[in-house]
Length: 63
Image (cartoon, rainbow, N blue to C red; front, side, top):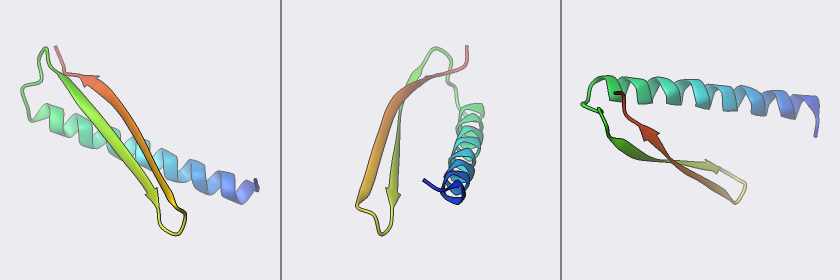
């Protein structure tokens, strides 16, 4: 793969990671999360490429 491709993909994934973390932290700050575990899911789609990638996991609330 080309350097331009790699850089654009890394830039996109960094933006996804940073903005997702900020959104999760904000939502948890405004809720009682003590002792709770939250199921999480991210769905990635790319228009024009028959792509749908699902990532699931869990996030532990703040103690």
